Structures are given as structure tokens and as C-alpha cells.
Amino acid sequence: MKLKLHVWRQNGPNDKGRMEVYDAPDVSPDQSFLEMLDDVNLVLARQGKDVIAFDHDCREGICGMCSQVINGVPHGGQERTTVCQLHMREFKDGDEIFIEPWKARAFPVIKDLVVDRGGLEKIMQAGGYTSCHTGGVADGNALPIGKDIADYSMDAAECIGCGACVAACPNSSAMLYTSAKVAQLAVLPQGKVEAHRRVMAMTEAATEHGFGNCSNHYECQASCPKGIDVKFIAKLNREYMKALIP
Amino acid sequence: MQLTQSSVGRKIIMAVTGIVLVAFVCVHLLGNSSLFFGADAINAYAQKLHSLGPFVWVFRLVMLAAFAIHIVFGIQLTLENRAATPEANVQVKRLRTGFGAETMIISGLVLLAFVVYHLLHFTVRVTNPEIYVPLGSSGMVDVYVMMVKGFQSVLPVIIYLVGMAFLFLHVSHGFQSLFQTLGLSNDKSLPVMGTTSKLVGFVLLVGYISIPLLIVAGLFKI
Image (cartoon, rainbow over all chains, first blue to last red; front, side):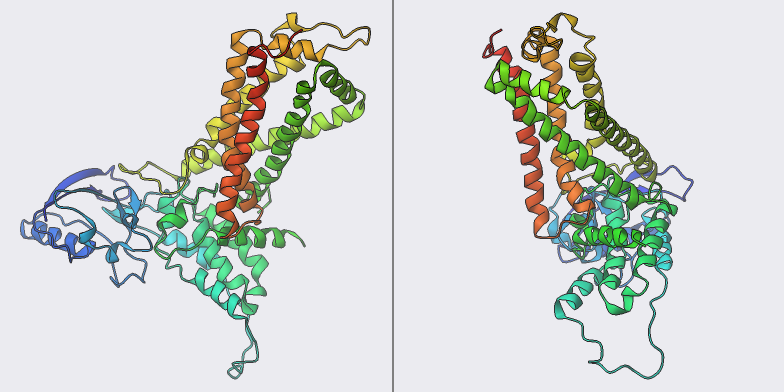
């Protein structure tokens, strides 16, 4: 099929940036979205032109590197799907596709579709360590954790830190990401020791690094490729209130 | 970081003051609906409120504080959120949020303007001084006459209709939002609360606009 691509081109954080139009004349429906962009770049490279810069790594939907707003929705709007797992069969011949980077003050554009998501790492770092006993390997059954709690923690830990929640949020808030990281530890015995300090430090770090405030739009959950639930934001709020009580 | 500076702390403050405000609009509507039981009922209700003496002022101060805090933090958070979002993408498609949620600051500021007008209209009594007549020899204003006469002209009716439409928008997002903020929601309850929130907003809208509309319809005679 034949597609027309409107792609955001920007030379660096200080460049103004603009949309440019490219043709993708021979797209296979079996290609992934990134493979389609690879083909476009191949043509650009042969013509000696500047290729479209975009982030990618594992290309199997688990690394959280690919980060493109496609037709106004982070990761393209297919439920629980990263850009790399989005296939061209979702589009029709003759479609015009808009491809833009994550836009948030906390995510400065490095080039074209590549943004610096270091702010998310800063939130993670602020979370700090979890206390644990040193010595020999603990007996597997010494610390029983109910399956419901283990599942809850795993659901939160599914977050791959791609930043789609920030890109989708009208306020550029990183609350879903932060809440997933807070919740995955807060329910486990290992994470409970520093739970109060962690929730305070992580929410503070989010503000410090330029992310906005959550006002419960729930756009984050709708475009999260891992389906992280906003119930974790409610959990973060509970953890925050618990931490307020001395 | 202090509660009044932190992102989540201020969100909680918004929710708590929101509870006070939404509880007030519910109680206020219940009080106003005594109009439907006739002139004596609404005047008795007004007299009862006035007889509370200093408690009226305590109540007013609490309301003023909640209102002011809600507005100041609402504006502050909105400005911060705008600053966190440099420029929108060329294409923006929202999947889940709604018109009410996206226009909270606008509906909030319209409601502020409405409350100022409403106080000037019925409490400070400067916009329409002709609607006030004394109630017998009690020294009080006849509230029934005040309400009926107050909605005889077109402008106040339009202002109240518009104001209440914005109250619906604001409550339809705000009500469910406060449960999420206070950590009282989960994946099961959130969709239910979303619907409940719109319903609460709708009941308030219908309840409040029924008063000027029924007065315009001529249901209440002086």
C-alpha cells in the first residue's frame, strides 16, 4: 500500500521543529510500523538526506524505547500495543499518518522523534533502595506473600517506562508511571520498610523534573501499552496520605 | 516538601475543599426546594437560618475559606500544568477524558463569576433592590417575594441557567475525581463513579434551574 507520512523534524532541543511530508510508496501490511519507517529511511539515506531519527531497541514490545505519537495518540492507539508491535495492516492504502514525538517540558527533543526521558529515571532514582536481610539465600517459604498481592505488584511492575502516560496526559504528568513504581513495592514486605519515604521522594522528584500535576483525566491508562490501571494512582494517593501521618 | 507545595498534597487539598463545596451545593438546593412548599415554608427556612446568629458567620467563613483555597490552588495547578506542556502536537486525539474534565479551569472561573453575581443579587442585594419587601413586622426580607421577583427579568434567568450548566460540567468531573484523589476508588468502582458523577451534576442542574424556570412559567404567584 501507499502512504503519506507527516513527520515531525527537529534538529535539537533549541530548534523550533516542523512537520515534513514523506511518501511511503510500497508498504507491506505485514511490516511493523518501525520497519515501515526503516524503509523510508533507507530511501532517504540513498538520496543522501538526513534520515528520520527515532528510538527503538527490542522491537518486541517490552523495552519501552519506541516513543511516537501516531495520529494524535501515543503508540498509535491500538490497545496495549507499543509502536514496534503496531502493524501496517491497521492502516489503509492512501492513509495519511501523522508521526510526532512525546511532547512534554520534561522530555526535551534530542532529534526528530527522539526525546530525552531521563526525567523518568530521576523519579526512579528518588525512590531509592529497599531494605533486605544480608546473608544466605532466604528460604522460599519464609516470607509468604498472597497470590492476590503478588499479582497486584506484578500488574504494577508491568510498566516498561516508555513515557506514553506523560505524552498522553493533557498536563504532562508522570503520575501513572510514578504510581506504578510506588505501588509495585508498597504492597510487598520488602518495599514496606521505606514506603513512606519513597512515595514522598518520588512524587517530589516528578515535580522537580518538570512533570505536571495529575487531574484525573485517565488518558494515561487509555494509551498505556501495558494497560497500567489508574487504580495505582489511587494507591499512590493512599500511600501519600499514610506517609503524612507521623 | 510541604503539603501546600507538593503535587499530591495540593490535589488532596483540592479534593477536601471540593467535598465542602459540593456538600454545600447539595444542602443549598435542599434548602431552596422548600420554595415548592409555598411562601411560608421558604420564609420559615430563611428565618431558621438567620436565627442561628453567630453560627451563620462561622459557616460563611468556612465556606469562604474552602472556596478561596479551591480557587487559588486550582489556578496555580492549572498554570503549572500548562507550563509542563510546551506546545501541543499537531494531531491530538483524546481517548478517555471528556469535555468537563478538560474545561475545569474555565467552568471553575465561570462559577466564581456566577457566585459573585449570585451574592450581589440575593445576599448583598445591590443588583435588583426593587425585589426586596419586608416580611410583615419581623424586620426580615420576604424571601418568597425576593425569589419570585428576582426571576421576573430575563437577564438573571439567563445568568442562572448558564451558571448551572457550568456547575454541571464542573461537578461531572470533580465528583468522581475527589474519590480517586482520596484513594477511595479502584478499577471496579471508577467507571461506576464516573457515571454517578455525571448523575450528581445532572440532578444539581435540574434541581437548580427548575426554580427560575418554574417561576418564569408562572407557577409561583405573589
